[in-house]
Length: 270
Image 1 (tube, rainbow, N blue to C red):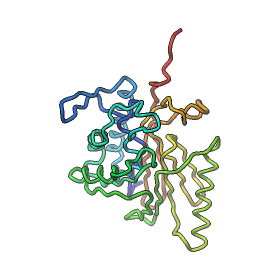
Image 2: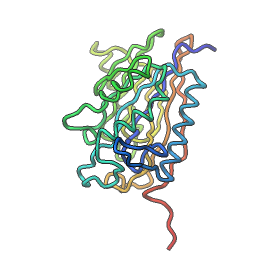
Image 3: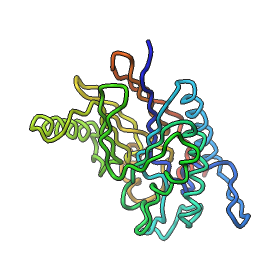
Image 4: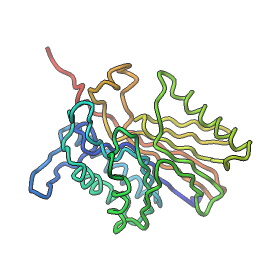
């Protein structure tokens, strides 16, 4: 079976958090060294493994669904940050993405408001800096409707909004149903793939006329208020998703998940 398109979906890298993806060693412009902790090294190894998988599966396009940077964590006065300079966070993120996007098309969406800058389009800046490395690099804004070239398939992508109290599949199914309703009313085209990030969790609902994909993250559990409720439910999925479209325009969704380290909730002896 031949594949006409192979697209990698990644989301929520949260560069700058000490609970998220970070290279083993990074030096800033002043020569200061920033080193990953053991948990971050584990996430980085998973990132490298996913990159190798993208190479083996001949990925032609990478789409980042937002929250590339962790931001300033204003509500907790910067607790949990490795660096509070957004330009440094951006530089590290670009360094991490280079190998993944080199020779491929790269598209990026903006993330949730809390992790965004109030006066700087950080995801657009990341796209601009990756242009010399990617085949093409473009910022898509908060939501995009994409016609997948070489196929008859359409994709709707966005970072995502608030999560479900308990049942995530209900939220995903509802959004898919509302998109089908808008299609029936002639307001929107048909979307074969609907992809979201934000929840730090992987789910894939394969319905008769839709693939609803919740893309996992590259950040482990952090000890902050939103994650303290339903502690078991808030354990994340680390990894990425690869979507393949074959010569008959059939869609298959491949998820690649890796064991999440415990940094803020490591096991302690008493």
